[in-house]
Structures are given as structure tokens and as C-alpha cells.
Image (cartoon, rainbow, N blue to C red; front, side, top):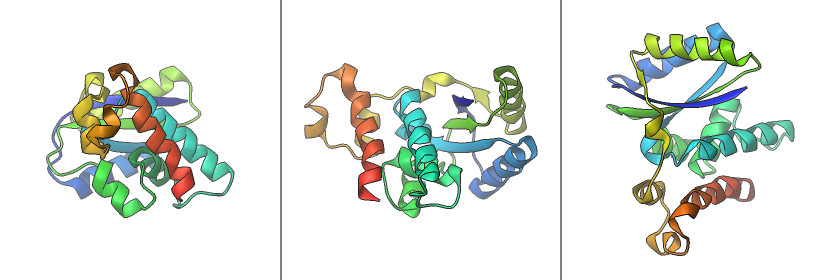
Length: 170
């Protein structure tokens, strides 16, 4: 089961925030990756990154040593994890975040885990932060002349193309 959610809250200490996520994930036997919502263009952006990451691990073409990092790599459209973290990873004082949860639990069990997770981090679920716009594309690094080549309803395709290109640039 894969679930993508948005949330709002404050990050005061990035290392502490990420450590809490890691401990929670291990305790609940779930993979969790977090992203800066300002660089996410819809749920399909993250679902595609998960799909590519799972496939890379299955084919043993992964670049990183964990599914979480591989998802981050694909979601960023980059081939180096340091650049990926800097680009799409959470940052100090981020107020809008996107999370992906990956496990083999039933939907209702995963929903309960997500509820506990948000409470632990004092975050409010807000899936509206997942939706991107033209500014998201520009922050992601897509040039204005590229954006002008497609209609508004195809903006997501520009991000999905960047996710898919990671396989080629690896």
C-alpha cells in the first residue's frame, strides 16, 4: 500500500524532525519519505517516484542504499542524493510538507499509522499542499520556455518526465 499525504506545521530542527520520522517508521514497520511541498506537483509526481524507485531496487539498478533515499532521488529528478536532498528534502522552517508511506498493511491500518504520525509531529493534514502550479515547475528547475510548450493541464507531465529521466541519467 502506498499513500501520499500533505501536511502543515513547523520544522524547528530538521535533524530532530527526521530522526523522529526514522524512529516512528522503524517502530511501525513502514517506509516514510518526506518532501518540501513547494517542489511537489501532485500525488502522481510522488507515486511515479515510488514506482521508479521500487523498480530500480528490484532490478538492482538503484543508486542509494534504501528505498526512502531512492524515492527522494527520483522525486527530485536528480541523480545525486546530496543534490536531491537540497532540492526537494524538507528544510528548516518548512510549513508545508508531503509524505509518502509505503508498506504492505491494509488501508485502515495505514490510516491509523498516519494519524498517529501526524499527532506525534504536531502536524495538520492538508492534502491541498500537494497540488502544484507553474511556480512549482519553476522552483523544480523547469525552464519557462519548456513550460510554454504545454497546456496547463499537462504541467504534471513535465515533472513526470524529469522523474523518468533519472533512469537515463543514472
